Image (cartoon, rainbow, N blue to C red):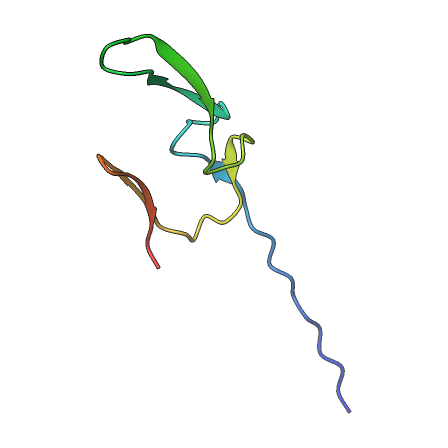
Length: 68
């Protein structure tokens, strides 16, 4: 019986396209009150990096979307 080795592919991390690596971004609070509000990035869990570069993420006017 021949022993085969399993290769584990480590995912390379890439910079988050939503927060651009900061882990946070600013949004306008409202139309009436146009002050900037700092919010945590939910796409990368505020790390600034995304683990799987093979995921296709599209950011448009409706927000961030992942193709499946």
